[in-house]
Length: 101
Image (tube, rainbow, N blue to C red; front, side, top):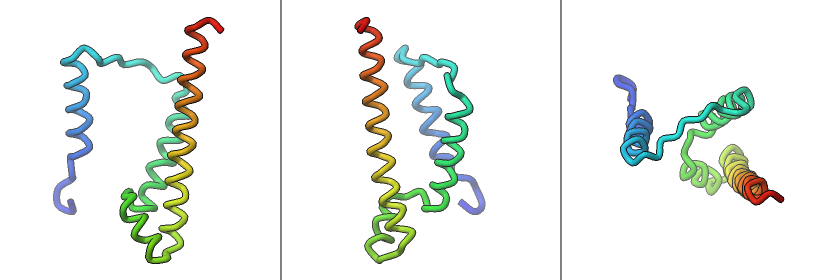
């Protein structure tokens, strides 16, 4: 990767877009809170670079007693829990709106 960029992410995104378009599931919509998502995406990328972007590496560092690994693992768990709760809340809110409650 030092001489040539790794294009795995680009390939996955282009493949997903092509498959969604082929099966009629590609629905592009404008973002409602674009600045909010931009700031959160920027922070996520930076925190990912700090941790090395690999949960297995974080677990191994935590097992060795590295404070960055332990803090990173705790943050990953908290992020997953908060993300799950946010998605459940959003789905419940959408379901209530469509039911007219």
